[in-house]
Length: 120
Image (cartoon, rainbow, N blue to C red):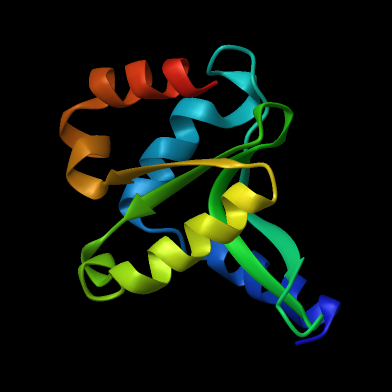
């Protein structure tokens, strides 16, 4: 995928957010959470073992804290190996990764917020 295609794909994801992503975004956008800047559908490029450029699109990223926030819907039950692989690469790139399932976002925001504070 070329950079323009990747950017277009990320923009499409922003336009078609899940309900959990919309909820989370309203809580953190415009530095509403601890004054930290969050980006949504953030493109992170890396190289694979052969030196080929690859990318991930993180649900949310706080660049200044090098924190990736992933919101896991039902599909993540079937791609745990891929999620672990991806987390390992992101950690190698200097990011920490925190995951929440959609139920936590909607029904336990105080715990989510406390975990965010710990990781920021």
